[in-house]
Structure formats: structure tokens, C-alpha cells
Length: 247
Ligand SMILES: [Ca+2]
Ligand SMILES: [Ca+2]
Ligand SMILES: [Ca+2]
Image (cartoon, rainbow, N blue to C red):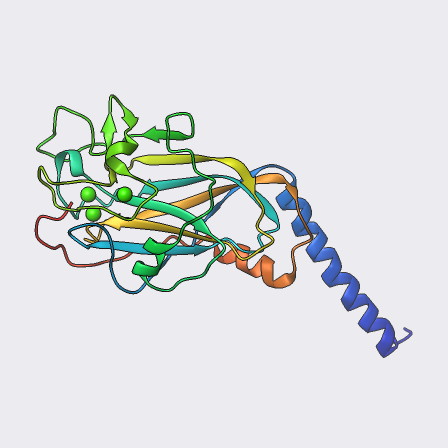
């Protein structure tokens, strides 16, 4: 058997890496798909009067595809927080920005990209269930089964996270509930891009995030980007002790 020369082996290795990259690109571009977000908790808390909103960030940079929608789903842990209309994950705000910040107050002060339509035409809400005692009305932040953004103010980290008549500025998803944001326009991920969401009360209620990406790749992903995509399969879960009477 003839031995391969060193330069030829080098060429074969290069070709193999290129083939892997192209195969993966082809797999991702075959259909529009969803990716789970890896959410990291930022330092500090923010929000409105109660100042108890925890903020989480996901890195959406360099995915190689445009993002068309974002879904936030309650983890259905059914353990933390107030019952009834305040059941489950309480979404204070959601923002997308090209700016990387590391603490909750800075996330509150970000202007964010103008990509969300918080009316019923830009959101799709599937309410989760309420824990006993069940409130005969809607979940908090919902009116007539539709997200009421005059109550939820999903563009601002401004929640008053107390589970009483002073509650303001968030949307309670209900156990297993889900809200989908259909973006005004597909967002390119070729620039640095970050998602920020807030949990009113910061009281151990958790959610997972998914994004839907378009079927048209913007670029061939670099190996580092492919690694980042593989890391997106991690749900975040935070275990914190229950505090008193937060939403
Ligand atoms: Ca809650
Ligand atoms: Ca809000
Ligand atoms: Ca909460």
C-alpha cells in the first residue's frame, strides 16, 4: 500500500472538515426549525417598585440564520410562587439588543430593537393552568384571553411583583403556559445579538426559551458557531428558595 504524503493527508483533513460543515449547514437549512435557548442569569435585580425582577440573557449571535419568532414556555414545575392568577413564570419584559450587558439594571436601561409587536396580532398566548385556589378570571396580564400589554408592559422591566391588588407590569404564564412572539421582521444574527427576559419576583419560577429560525442560511457556520448551536439545547433551570408572597 502506498503511503499518503503529509501534504495530501493535510488536504484530506481540510476536505473532511469542509464536508462536515456543509452537511450540518444542509441539515439546518432543510427546513425552518427551532432551537432551545441557553439562558444565563444576570447579576442583580431590577423592575418597578418591588425591584425584584431577575433577568436572563441568551446569546443569539452568529447562528447563521434569521430569527422569525421567539417562544417562552413555563417549565411547569408547579412549585414556586403565588397560586391562582399569578401561577407559574411571570414575564416582566422581553428585549433583543446588539448590546451585551451583565446586570439587570443595564438590561432595564437598554432601548432594545424594534422587533416586537405586543398586540394580539404579534403574540400567540396559550395559557397554562392555575393552581388552587383558582381565580375565575384570566391569568395576570391577560384580558379576555388575550395578552393585555397595558397591564403586562412587556417592553419594560417595570414589574411590581407583589401578588395583590398592586401587582403590575408582567404576564403570568400559568403552569405549562406559553407565549410566542412573531417578530415584525426576521432578525439577522450576523451581528452580536442578545435576548433578555425578566422573571417578576425572582422567586424560583422558571421557563425555557425557543427560537424559530428561517429556512434560508445567511452564511456557512464557522465551526465555533456550530458548537454554539449544539450548546443551545440546554434549558435553564434555577432553584431558589421561595420567598414570601411574590408573584
Ligand atoms: Ca408566578
Ligand atoms: Ca413589564
Ligand atoms: Ca415570579
